[in-house]
Structure formats: C-alpha cells, structure tokens
Length: 261
Image 1 (tube, rainbow, N blue to C red):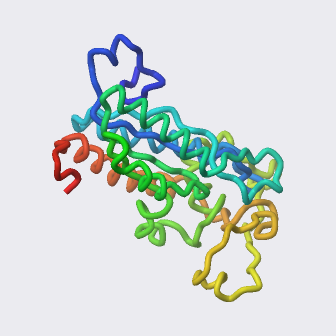
Image 2: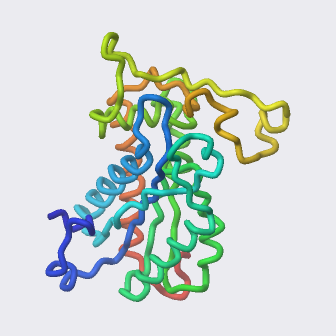
C-alpha cells in the first residue's frame, strides 16, 4: 500500500491518518496520432500525480492523490472516433461535487493537476472561490509548470502527441507506444498542422477552438520522432521537484484569514 494514493489505501489507514492536501488529476480519452494510446493524458496524469505526491509524502506532507478523471472536453475532436467528450460545464460539475466531498471530509486544500489542454479550469476556480472552504489551486503541467524548461529538453515545439508527450510515454508506459515492426521507428506521422486563413489566428493574436480534423492529418500536432525516454525522465524530474515542493509548502501553511497571502 502506498498511502499517498487513495485508490490503494484502505479505511483502516485513512480513519486514523487524516490528509492535509488532496491532488485531483484530470486526463482525457482522445486519439494521439497513430502511435500513442487514447489514454495518454490519463496515463501521464497518473504517473505525475503518484510521483509528485510520493516526493511530498517523503518530506512529511500528508498528501493524497485521488483517482484520475479519465474524460475531458473533446468538442473539437469529435470528428475522430471514440474521442469521449464532457462539456466544460460537465467537467465543472464533476469537480465541484468532488470539492464538496473534500469539504465534508475536512480536506480544505486541493491541487487540480491538469493533463489535458482541452480542460479550461481557471474559470472554475473563480466560480468556486468564496463558495467552499476548500482552497483550490491549478497546475497545467504541460504549460505553466514546465514552459521555461521545455526548450532545454525538447528539439521542437509540442502541442499534442509530439516529442514531449511521446518522451513521457516512452519513459512511463512504453509498452503502449506503437512502433513499425520492421524499422522500429514510431508508427506516427510528423504531426504537421495546417494554418488557418487568418493571420491573426496563426500569429496567436486571436484564438478559436481549433477543429482538429482540419488542423491535423492523424490527430497529432507536433513532431514526435525526436522523442526518447531520457527526455521524458528529465521533464518528470522538473515536474516532481516543483509540484512536490509546492505541496509541502501548502500542507504546512495555516488556513488563516490571510491565506494564501
């Protein structure tokens, strides 16, 4: 039993060992080019959540990682078979119900560990603020948490099923990465994407929900072929160091009238 993983923990332990902080990972079920599994975001969330909480636990923080939510918002991938969509409002309702559960059980500090770009969770934090005793934080590990170090680790920018995600897969669930049986190369295209007809969108001055079947060839956005397990391990070490350190600080912080300041 690893007591920082709720799914492995039993009531005999939990009833006598209250937790200070919960971590809720959020994944997705969607295609990832031709070589990665539909559960890539969920497998990543599992691997990251378990390691982050273990590192924080080893430093004395009583943290627990909840089971990963395996579905997310896929409205722009619905042209691809078995992309399993939850509307943003549905995701918000699920998270809100789980926050209510934590509040009832006296766990008033929560980190949302998001592993899916389609999950836009910042508005939910604003809705929850002041309505619950649970203080909710958000980490998008693939964006803000590691944005500064990604150029040091990876050769090309990554969006979806590219070098970064493939490197994590090769490091932590390599048995699910498909290779060409003859060449041993990744069974993937190069993840090329199509520009829109609008310069403002292409330059990032204007945003939209991108229809993925028009943007990509086989759902991949980002070239995966420079990926390797060592790069995935380097990225994981950064994530674990940064987020476990945050959890240690969060667990030790008093919930007074000035929290989190």
